[in-house]
Length: 112
Image (cartoon, rainbow, N blue to C red):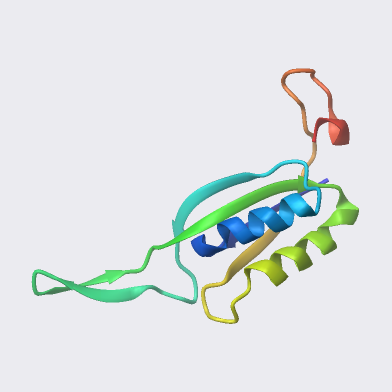
C-alpha cells in the first residue's frame, strides 16, 4: 500500500475530487494548507510597508491505494491539476506499513 499526497491549487478542488471519485477511489482526506516552493509568493504594500506574502494557500489530498494503482493515480492527478504554470503543486508517494479500520479492526487492504 502507498500513501499518495498531492499538494494542488485551491481552484482544482472540485475537478480533482470529481476525477478521483470517477476513478473509484474509495476515500480521501482533503486539507487546506499553506506553503511555498518555487512560486515564492508575492509582495504587497500594507500601510506603506512592503510585506512579502510567501505562504500560498493550497489543498492537500491524501489517499491510500494499492501499489499497482499508484502510476494511474499520479497520471490522473497530473492531468487534472496541471495548468502549466509555476505553483501547480507536488505529489509525494510513501509506503504505508499497516492500516486498521477502527470500527471493525480490519487490517490491510480490507481496511481501505
